[in-house]
Length: 154
Image (cartoon, rainbow, N blue to C red; front, side, top):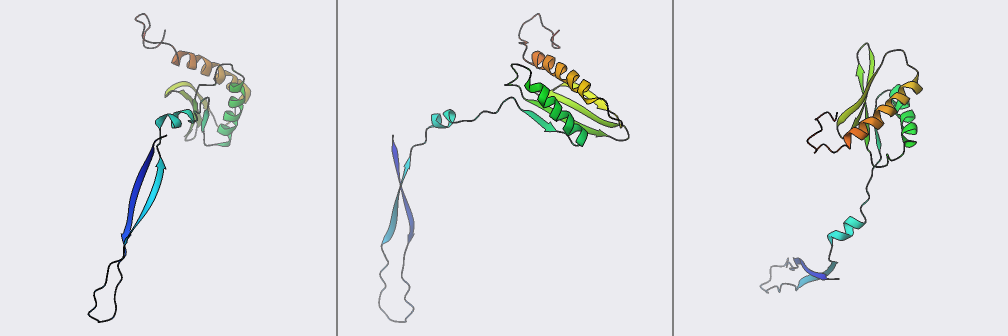
């Protein structure tokens, strides 16, 4: 391992004579410190890097939205091969009409639903959101470089 040697000059000490004598004051010696630092290699950081994936990010506001995220997260964990997929669930309050929940993958909306002032049965909505999320993740991972595919994927 290569070692870099760094010399740091802290400061020069000088003595101050407060008397009014005509003697010359000798400056003190320079103080030097030796600091030995190991070389930092870029490869060390890449090997120890922690990668987070398969996250469901909760951006909801209300208690109803938090409950939706909790139940959706439980059903999403049961789906195979979703370990590398990051989802964002956002909630927007709509005045006098309830809330809007949106599920996004890679910045694209893959599912959207509205909850009125009266609550819908949560399990049916979560099941539907899970199915749409699976389909949306599959669409997001489709290779769009082929000439026979349109922008929409169909």
